Length: 300
Image 1 (tube, rainbow, N blue to C red):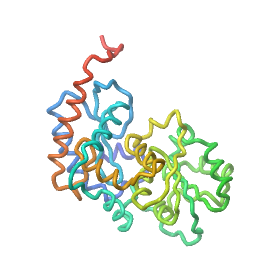
Image 2 (image 1 turned 90 degrees about the horizontal axis):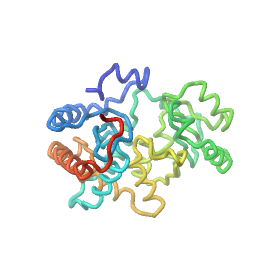
Image 3 (image 1 turned 90 degrees about the vertical axis):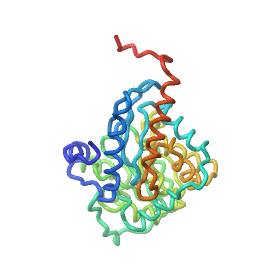
């Protein structure tokens, strides 16, 4: 088990601690790993890679207090979400309401000990949610950040990710303005609730929480690397809903309620085990459709 392994967590997020709200996913991870023993494929926690459509590995991680599973292949990730939407499940669960409740109950934050002292900061209409130091310079478009700075002037805050180094924060202050950069450990969701527009990435949970709250969203990713975003297979559709004036909350509920989405939440779905079993059978059946379409040149 890796999702709740303290050693692995320290390697990935340093001294930060995951929120207790994620503890509900412990049983899901245990059950998932147990069921995967029935298949010949492997599992990997919290990684993105581009294997063949006839994939070797299923990736899994947490996403807005949900447990998500997807193949480590770009096309197959997108395929499962499209299939989930096309399922048009009757009596869809209200995942969107659950997301709103997370914010209301102050459990949306993925990390513990977020500072709630926000009185010294003005209410602004625009919030930019940045990736961490390890992703920021490669995956976030600096020219877009400068454009946002110039467009909104004093009506915008840039929120560094909690794992951002102080050196990078210093660079951000030099480029974007010291007064516009929020502390890295402050509660991002306070500002998200007050903003009417949120600029974010395909690797951030803030996209789906913004949609749940009825906020406008816009990407800040480097375009030719956007598909590498941790949650691209979900967030892409959220951005498209925004662009096409489609109800994003309706998309979330209808898509996530299908087992084909690979999204599971034991708080609102008491039948999550059968849903997970159905997903594993479905995605491995999809995998078989691509047998020998492409051959790995590294195999002997």
